[in-house]
Amino acid sequence: MEPSNLSMPAVSRFHRWAARLALSVACIAVMASAETERSPEVVAHHSSDFLRLTTQDAPRVTRHFLVRVSGAQPPSKKSVEVEMTARISASWTPKNPEHAARPWLHARLSMGEEERDGDELLILERNPVSQQVLEVRAASFSRCMLNEVCEWEVPLELELQTQVVEGSVTLSWNVEVAARVVDASKVPEGFTVELLSL
Image 1 (cartoon, helix red, strand yellow):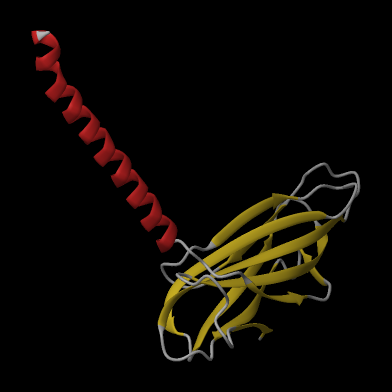
Image 2: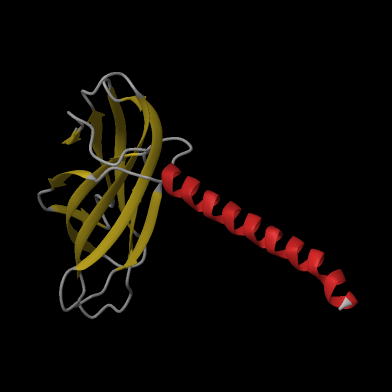
């Protein structure tokens, strides 16, 4: 009986320690869940006309977009997450169909200094079954007053590799911007997102 009595405090201490650990984990999980709560996305779209880049004369182009987020609720500093996605469709036509070289298409999407920029590369095929698609994403995490206007000027840079093979690439793109409010379970009243081509 004596060994049993001596072991009881140790078991009790272990149970208390395990209970505290479980409680701490639960609290951390609740806090993390609360901190990462986000409102549903509000989305805006823009589609382009066709654009042609050539290896000889016009291998690169930049298009500028304006992302505008605003809200009409009473003044309240909230963190707004904005993610922008450009899906570029490309169709490569070599000047000499027998040439085996394949150039690359480079796309870059930038939401500004110290933000998460997108930078992607696509090797162009001579005779793809369908148009090739290059997807590039950029994101921003900003604090702003929801009763004011927050704006990002976002350049989309496209470049066709030169000095490899002569030809041209026909491009079109769809751009989407999605904005969410952090620490909000629903979309604030009057919260809007605009995507403009400059």
